[in-house]
Length: 451
Image (tube, rainbow, N blue to C red; front, side, top):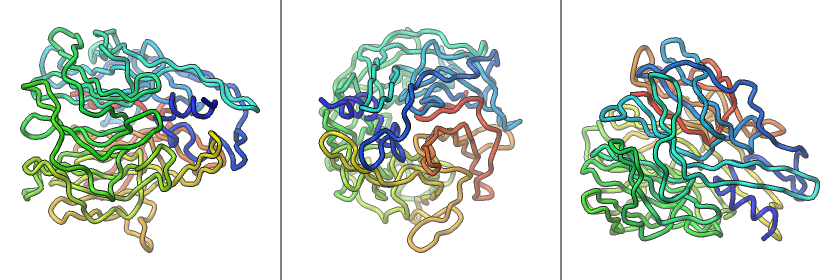
């Protein structure tokens, strides 16, 4: 296996857009920047305790853009600023955060698994060492500290984690080392342990998941093998039986299949309440042409089938999709473009991160550009270009109902850079406003509302 393929399957299945958004290599296959990448964390931790309504951001790719960091911060909606809180025990990226509002771990946040490692760039290629984590951390709001909680049955990153109606967390799929897994497990807050549950019919990583109104979970798309081949299939997890069942239909032919989003529709007072909006993603192999799509489709829990909708204005992968109000979904940023491989190395990488956003309205089933459009595409409306960022709906104070965007990768500079910037989408104004920056740069990080 070439050095590039080793990197691509070990870390860049968190994807080409994550490690190389805008160009790890130039057109000749030469590294764009030659340096040893290490942990650059000028600010490691603080002692700030969390308040209900704060937003926790943790880990992610660090300021170097390739190695993860272990820092964590809290966003205060009242002051619109970030403060350092307790750090993770070790650097982590490509993990997910799940916040508990009630039960034994009320107001606390679970961060399981992820990927850690270090990469060195040389004139002749890459040297990379990584570890897939099975550890899990519990962030305690009262102390502002992380502590170990249980251990996953299967190490994984780029998985989905879904809080079930019974209070448990379903962790499904992801990458274990180089390989997508079909294994799934449950975290029980009462025992603070992970136990295996039924496996999926198809191995998946970089897929999407959504909790349905009947308590079951939709799992859709993803990468299914070491080659990065994507799948159009979907499955339903039933907590009562602990089993996955394939849906009646697959994603439409036009749909993206990995790096996509799945958002439950509610509050529209229309026939689409309870359905799931599927947005963006890419199809084919990891380096398929084109890699990004502008597709939209809707999953019906009644028929267990998908149907294509009118596409977005911009192609997007590694974007965010957040339900805001009245059945409207805010879709932000992402990566648009393609990557070509020749003889095992990237021979051409074309594309860019986006500073555009769209709002999908369930009643009309149409996505409209925030700030209008120019020709066939959206006008720039975000304060920064970003992909691999995080979006969290704020539920308290003057920002209640608004969406916080943090970090991500910006490929518009000469050298693509991980960001420490943040911004708020105001649902009342229908526009983005910059807020205080994070203390540390991060992308593909974990983020959750303290409930």
